[in-house]
Length: 586
Image 1 (cartoon, rainbow, N blue to C red):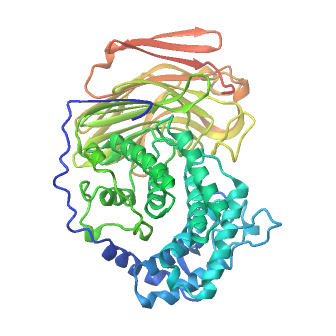
Image 2: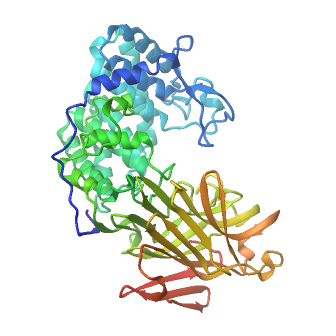
Image 3: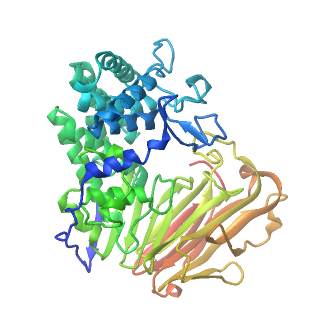
């Protein structure tokens, strides 16, 4: 791994000779996926119907049982044509015609070249429209022309060319930078392949330049901007694989192969075989346990070396078909090994000789990962452990909750050595509440509850947890693996109302199939918490995972002006934190 420390000891190895490749028949899997959506096709709207879900932004739709998605409908249309069956052609053409008609073609508008998310909501109704939809829809159209251009009716082929060029122009006008990994790749995909298809050298060169910028930005880090993200690494692998498999421009293929090699190595070294989970920390993810779709993707990409389900029962996304997705053979053993690994990686460079780092430690029984400094957004997994629990996995995830939702202006600070993470939590006065950018606050929130939570989820069989007296911490056990939480410093409040200086206490509870170990910072009548006026707000703890005796770590806690220091020796290395004593700026 470039720019990373990667150490493996006591390797158990991974034999790839037993790959179960004989039963892979992707066309059969594609046909099954298409047939499973038969009752979702709406002939009246000429689009695919799917259950409504919302991330809470862009769409103004709050409640609906079903919607008709532009992007998903185009994926389905391409899948219909990929089957090669004549009976599906007319339906595919109807869907493409319908979705093309929903594109904004008015060059005077800021939304030119993009599509709404849903048939049920126009671009003008969205808040705001999603400019990424030039990329999401454009890539499906350009791939449809690439694979099936000779099958398309002449009028539809001409309409698709116009829609693709509109999308390319919108992508170029927006000109997303390489820090926005998945859109940087998708935009390069649309423009590069469109340029090759239609002889538009301006598009082709723009797409190639965008890939060059992505490579120049990414390779010094040895990681994508969305560091170790199960969600966005998957997307990057899928889109880069498509470009590599269809691009005529040889340099584009070379760049994609280099980035794919980096991506697959990163996935492999973070994969924990005993729990079948993707070790943390995660810069962006939407679930703490891997989705079945992600596991299926890895089973397919490793040729069955990773095996979760018989091929006939395996989830299959029609977007994977002919996508060229394959983990390089040299990296497959990483997924199969049962060994001790230590990974330290600088994933964000600040231009001053420093930056942000991530640490992951793995044993055959557990994995523990942490960021050295990161906001506790609900898409982050800043301090995360997975523990083998029989044949299942149990996770332990640190969160800070404002009225039950992850609070973005809490900041994790961590110094990790193997299975011991010394960590602290501080607070910002000018960050976001539920999102880093969309709901930035001025240092004040209205709240009836604010708490730090160690959440234990996944398999809860063979799990025990007990809070210790006072605010000392908690002892936990997951199957044969002990975990110990210890408090070194806990101060929050001392404005005129908040807590009246009462000591913070840990408490245990259970709800929604999870166990919680909570440090309650405030709970009571809804009131304003003004972080700018708090005289103190700093928390410091240790989480020990494994069988080593934590009593050998007895750090000193010091106060030096506006900073709290916690420092002590663990395994012949000093673990230390230097926390802001009260909320402030980054």
